Length: 348
Figure: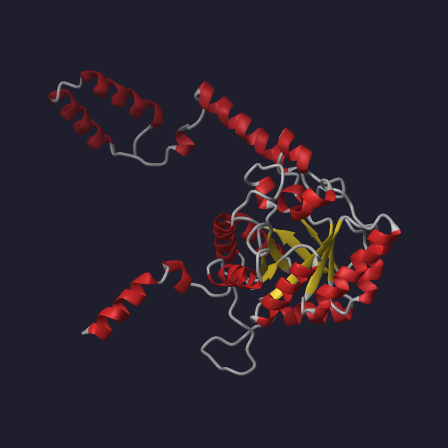
């Protein structure tokens, strides 16, 4: 009985979401058989990214933070979906990426994992969750995979401690994407959102840091806000893909923030945090604003909802009975309102 009671307590201690999903995608398998054959054309793995890189085919990466955006990325055939800590700015309204917590990031990760079945899913490690020690870094990365449903993690920077953290996470069996150049989590040291690699020492540091991240086992490196010649040099020096963001056309792939490339927000805050390098492929925010204004106008003038958007009917005989019952209850005013509504909208 004691053993059974202990087992029961252990089961109850397991977090519900921890047993539902361990990775976003069914792992690619050439060893085990199963009822569903693996179809590499339907999902992206690190193997596919390596193949694209070897063939010189550009890799597409877009951020996503919720289920609807993940579904859109999935439908568009984007290779990699990055659940970025940029959510702090474009979703939560902060001026930097620093405030967002691990628990908040995990909520975004789980929502994205439910919506995207094809792309490789990568979750950012938020500031303050991996800098203290390698054990902290590994513990955080494990949570992002087990609780967030991600396939890999991304961490920023090339300081010795962060490179050591990247090595520890890789050695724990977790795929890591590095990030050099402008690293938004380090704006306290960088003096703000400033491009990197604009002078000799900084340019060499970008390349050396990227090489160091490759050396510890990173499968890819993001190059943010560096001059194109520096990005081209890093891409040539590395044997792993580079993903550019504000780094010119010479990287192995590109990444943009979902809200930025869609032109989704026309708010002063978003204008303040929209980067100069971003191309807006749509102006979705204008469409949203127009729709909301039209909705407000139609509700105000009474044209919505009309008969076309009032689909649920009650039969004429039931209306008569309903009116009689209301009158029996002494609700003459309610009966009159119901009769007028039935005349305007119609019955079945």
